[in-house]
Length: 121
Length: 234
Image (cartoon, rainbow over all chains, first blue to last red; front, top):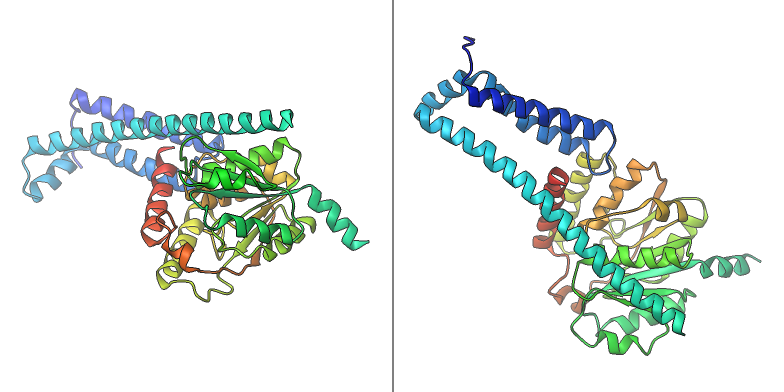
């Protein structure tokens, strides 16, 4: 496969993908409770695909041509998907944290009320 | 002698029942549980809007109320936290709609007393009356659990379980909805807890099957998707 110098945005994407893959592996090997093998494989597969298309963009372009898409549109879709995946990843992660905090507050209130009643009686 | 020992052990045993708008069924469930000799009953009301609070204030139970609805898993976790604070060493969790037969509590507790960390009630050894869609959903969920967590069980969705002290101390599940029961299985693997399955009877009554918030096929699919998404993004 022909390797040409990469456009600068693709260097950035490749570095980001490598960073995310290392981060996922670190989480898995430090045995974080919700870092399952399934999650690790899923996330790493996506970032590995992004990494491959970043390093060998022509493979993606050739694929895109075969599919009848123009090169520019292909790049736009590719970059768009990376950004959407990043945003989704961050948003759902934060939403989960807010949800957990809300539940903790509701739980704290319920138990506090009950313990107060227990102490009174 | 044996009877005395069991009575003593039951003093350190609590039954946690999460409920949401179960005013029509909860009194019978409590009476049935008490008739088995289990007197420490912790009811966690997950933001009910019916007469549950008024009804339960007359009964000899520990009543905790979530100010807003947070889901079955959140309610169970609240009950377990309260039970831990009160020094209970065995906790049984069961549904509040009358589907579970309270007599099975004692079988689950016996397994914990015999040394298991967790006793999982399974409906699949006697699935009589179970709707076909639920059977299919259950098998699919079991496969998913095996694929994701590496644990093989016959009923990954059952909420009728007993937990020993080691399990109670280890668990800290942050999943609020029905996926709680499934994700608990992940903890068994992670913490190397011993477990066994106990056949249980389930009564599919007209009341339990007509509930809006029951765990039906659609909710099962939602739960499955929630597990996959939350495993990826948590």
